[in-house]
Amino acid sequence: MTSSCVLLYASMSGNTMRMANMIAEGVAQAGCDLVVKEMYTASALELEAYDCILLGSSTWGDGELPDEALDFYEEMDQLNLHGKTAAVFGSGDSSYEHYGAAVDLLEHKLWELGADLVLGSFKVEHSPTRDEFEDCRLFGKAFVEQSSYYEK
Image (cartoon, rainbow, N blue to C red; front, side):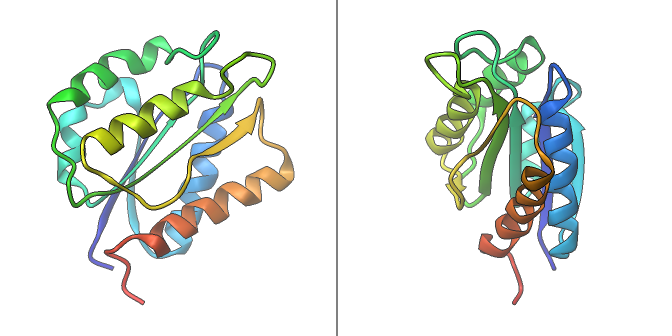
């Protein structure tokens, strides 16, 4: 495996963090080296150093990014992510009009910046169930396998 992957997440209640940990397991099982960080500790500029990008976020209120992700999101505007493989995940609450809208915002931003979105976004209602933990691992594995950098 020659690709380098990064997984950055913003989690307010720990649900998206748990998803990130399970997705990271799937990425590792697929044989890809992975750096995992909380979004507020990273600079968006770091994304340009990786071949594969996974972003995760919980959704605040009726569709906003959490405070932990706002600076990162705004900083992304200066990036060129053409040639990068990407996917987005996160937890949400379907009682709001815009379920998991922060995930949609990140996915649209990656698309605007030229990233190749190889999987549809993956959303979980509140806290992942046991079955959804397995789905997270499978999402991570599928992400690597769909990447153009994956050596079969």
